[in-house]
Length: 177
Image (cartoon, rainbow, N blue to C red; front, side):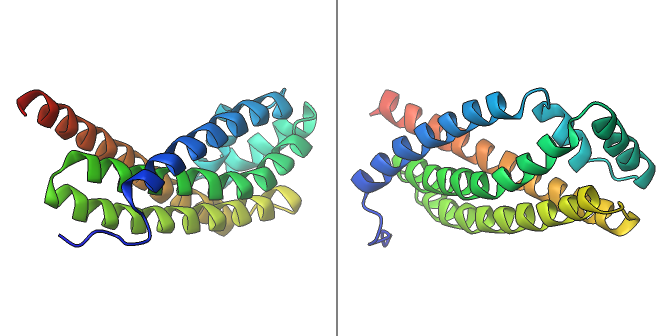
């Protein structure tokens, strides 16, 4: 099978660890910076689906002084999109190669493309949420954010499961060989 010439295994391994560290640091710093707003509250807004639910969340955030934190958090998320999609993309390529299984190596490239789609969905979702938070939420913007969030989360979960399968194949290969 033809290997990706731009990504030798040593480079993928290095980038995997660098991006893992950056993602961990970014998550910790964001959680600290966003207080008193929690990640769960943002996810609830992403998945509101119903205009009335989204309006109640916005009203709650306004009442308790969390609205500006939410807006800043969404702007920070644009940076995080680059980090997490890059990290998962590299992880899917790296661990698919480590599996030593040709089908998984091909699938790793497909998953990498799916993660780019997840990043695009996340950008669209953020724009829809900002429209709702900086103006008046509309049914369309709430549904768009919901659809993009569910697509993004589905792809991210699928890629995490794929990486786990690759790790199992890697471990089995080490045990058997």
